[in-house]
Length: 156
Image 1 (cartoon, rainbow, N blue to C red):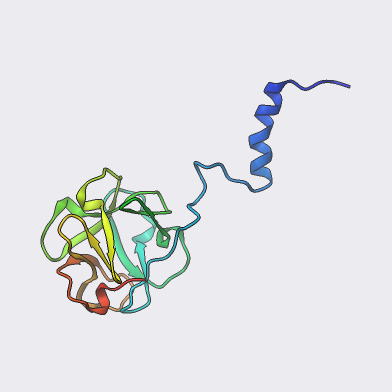
Image 2 (cartoon, helix red, strand yellow):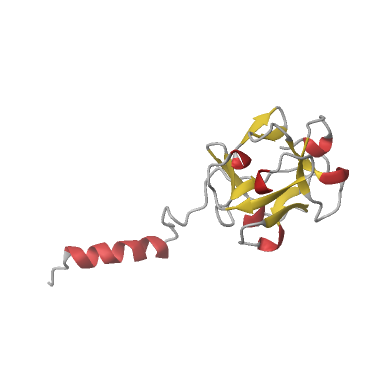
């Protein structure tokens, strides 16, 4: 009987794990990822068109379970399962209507968030994640706005 070397067993182990469906930690989706839904219309926060680029638009869309609609908290960051990029207030904009996009995580205040009741607020200026103009349509823009308690600023 031939003895196998430790090197061949080490090389074989990762292939065996993949063959039986065990993903490596680097590729595994976070266990606690979830859809973020708006109270306004029950639609999901969505990275439009599965766009992997910095600056990808964040919109509302009918929930479909895609990676572009799955989110997880990493400290104060909200990340997408699609590419692990962060929900970002574009350009550190403090104005009402500031665009919300996806960007490489950098730890900035414009990428830090917290729950306040059902509101999701940014550390940058304490404004609320908002479905612009109470829009119920697929593709409705997501922006930052002074918190007002509206259904378009409540999430679950």
